[in-house]
Length: 246
Length: 74
Image (cartoon, rainbow over all chains, first blue to last red; front, side, top):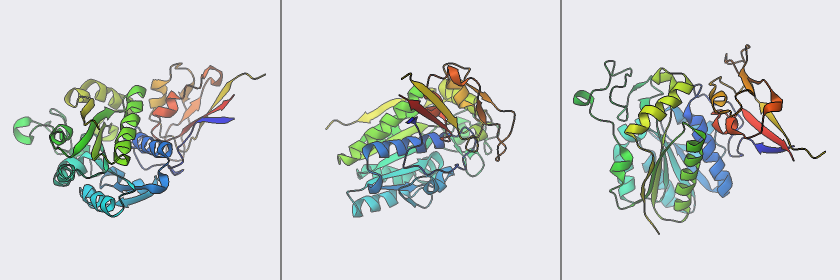
């Protein structure tokens, strides 16, 4: 019997700590598949965030570091400058990247650092108990916005990719999702493109993945995927936001 | 003799019972939710009609926990 579909080699054979139906598991696997396909496992350094994915080094079988909250791009900058031949990527959630780490990500993009960012946007702080994040949708109830998020009090959902697009050092930005097989395969393609553009020394690349958080959205995993398809992608339109040729 | 067969394998201890695989299965009749619980207390997925499986692997692509493996006999 040949294995038609199996766990990628870069992924350790363990059960993750993520909740049932969490998108992190799918994205972890897609990253490992891309690394196996590019055959760069021995040459990869990943930087894990603070957030639900803080234990990513338990699941990835390649070099992984852990950074302080939001400072992941700063650590990745150092790693890439010291070891320019490595594939360096950061894996960040929306609380990490869009809230406390906004300064780091914008300046890393502005300097045109040659590493990739996988930005997992699920619209809440998952690890600490489902508090409101800058990316929470208007009208969404969270632990710290019990009367729903209102624009006059808490502001509007922060669109990081559109902000990053004006920076000249940024070469590739794409927003994808996980709600269907087509979108999952598109996410894999986008991650591969981002890693390839880094290997081609083009500059800063970033993929935002709209991911479900069934636990803190208060929905079943299937309903959470439906919510992404019906509501979340209206606020965060999918597709390539920026791609510099050459 | 050389009939192509596929076999679906489910690691019941990895399954967290999210049921996303049930939603994407084009046959809708291959998998079902077990009545038993695994060690983490999830109602894991079991195979209902193995002969209806075409081996498209959509369930495995969707699975967040790498609990599904597809084997093929060419």
